Image (cartoon, rainbow, N blue to C red; front, side, top):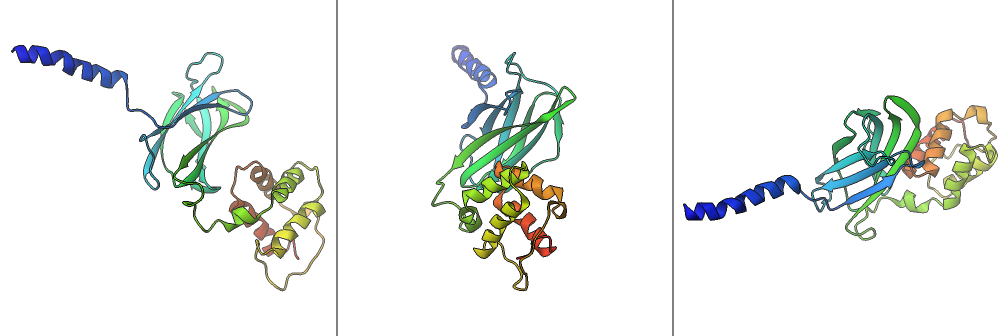
Length: 239
C-alpha cells in the first residue's frame, strides 16, 4: 500500500505531462503570407522525417493582429522536391477550424512546401503564398541524377518568362529564349521544324500563366517545358 502511494504521484505526473506536452515536432516555423494577411505555422511529425515515409504536416493559420487561430480559411497545399511535385497541388480546400494535418511524403534534398491562401471567412482574397523549406539529408550527393533540365536552364530564361508574362517584353524576345533552349537540346523537337514568326494571339493564355508561375518558382522546370513542347508540337512556335 505504501509503494502504491509513492508511485501514484509519479504515474499522475506522467499522465498530466503527456497531455500538456504532446509529441514534439522537429520542424516548427511560422511564416507570413506575401502581403502579411495571415501567418502560417508549419510543423512536422515525426521528429525526423525520413525520405519516402509519410510525414504529417501540421498547418495552423494565425491572425497576425490577434495571434489567434484564424477560422474559415480556403487554401491549397503542394510539396515540391527540387522543383518536382511530391504532393498536390490539392484542390482549393476549406478549413473551418483554421488548422489541418496533412500526410505527405518528403524526399532527400530540399522539400518546398507552398501554402496558398485564397479565402478568409467565406470571402475570396487575392492569392497569397507562404513557403517553407525542409531539407533532408544532403542537397548535393543525395539529389536525384535525372534533374539535368533543372540545372541547364539559364536564369535569364526564367527572368524573360516573368517579364513576358507581365507584358514587359514582346513575344519575339520570349521566343528567342525558347529557341535557345531548343538549340541547346533542352527541348526536343522534330528535325523537320523550320523557323517562323508567331504572334501573341497564337499563344494560349495558359502558357503565359505557366510562365508567370514558373518565374516565381511555383511550378517546376519540367511543367514549364511541357507547355513549350505543346507550342512546338502544335506548330504555334516552329524552329
